[in-house]
Length: 348
Image 1 (cartoon, rainbow, N blue to C red):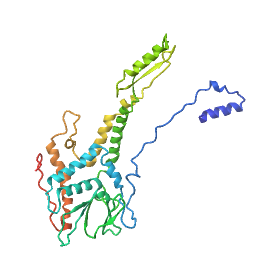
Image 2 (cartoon, rainbow, N blue to C red):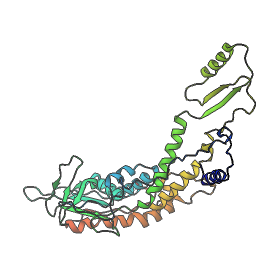
Image 3 (cartoon, rainbow, N blue to C red):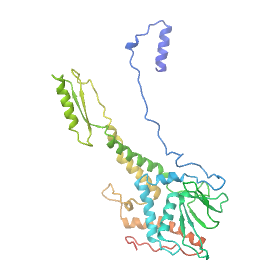
Image 4 (cartoon, one colour):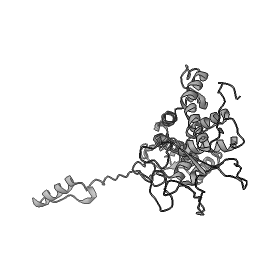
């Protein structure tokens, strides 16, 4: 009961005015909510503002399990990472100490987690062995920042030999121990993109939306006729079709039943707008031209020349990545990371 209603009743009682019978009082209004907006779960992704030391190694500022799970949140997110990885691998020149497969894994780690690690080992005769990628999801920096640990999900952690691991990291403004990926600002958009897809998919799968309602008010001569009509209506529905509803109300009034279709929500949820806006946010964070991801333009003019877009994208995004990976050469003392010129429209 509202405060105004309570105040009115109290004042009336004070004046000795008799209250009307409760049977004539209007039914109280009831309302409920569907829940508050849910942000991206910080417990699953953004754990800490800075790194913390557990005594043996530093924990990352971002939950790497959350980043790995977010990798496939939206097709544009993973595709934007894959195209950068593919261009780097396409121009990489394999070396006896660094294969294309190992380099591909390094690239995917760096673009996904903001860090990648390479282990260098020597044989018993002190010959340098081929470099091996240490998965970025499970590699940690030691407490003294001079060594590294491998911490798999099984819990059997082991420490690398000093000086055998090279780390490439994307700079973070909050700490200097680990790198963070550049696309963090787009994770909410990727989550929205996924939520919109799941909502629409569940809407079609749950079968709760109706095809039509057959509303019958005239009393039938025989109850069996109504049952037969109901059964015929039920059997006419094929698998996967909308559900049809039957309402029988003998002597019912024309407006005795009103229906506000729940399915109307689907027409107003702006599914296409949500998908397109979230897609644009994701591509803006990755700085990938849409025509390079096979996106069909909505306008008649298209996205422009794909070759020019590819040239600009390669110059602005891929070349800086090549220069960063070339830093492995200085650490190793050998020229193992080299790239061939990139020619648009050619794989060689």
